[in-house]
Image 1 (cartoon, rainbow, N blue to C red):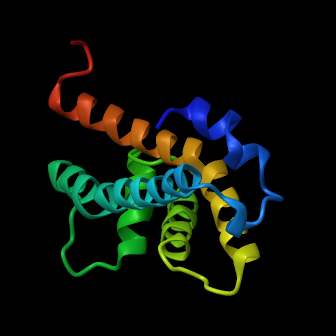
Image 2: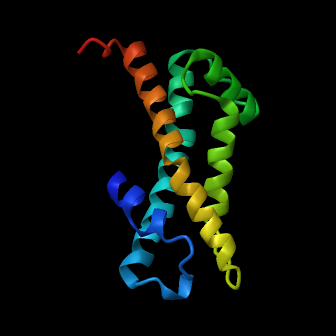
Length: 139
């Protein structure tokens, strides 16, 4: 799914559409957006971030996740711990279905689309940190 599809497509334009009027392809795009956003954010938080903290010898197994996020922010791995928490909350909210509450579903989709650049920014920080730590930044 391209960024153009998201920014110029029905998701950005059609917020006033009723969920019941979405075509099957539009429903599939929404489902894929929610699924891929959640999967990427989850993988970054459960695999990539812990691996980078271990690489930096900053991993503490028993430490609360928010403390790990704060350390990751201080090390430049992520732009902001608070931003990460918001992305995680959005992922959790978007993963649930809200039968009988289409306005809540639409609001979550809108926030998800608006948050894609923040997720990309966080991934970019993690990638840059990994490249610097592994000596791949110059290649």
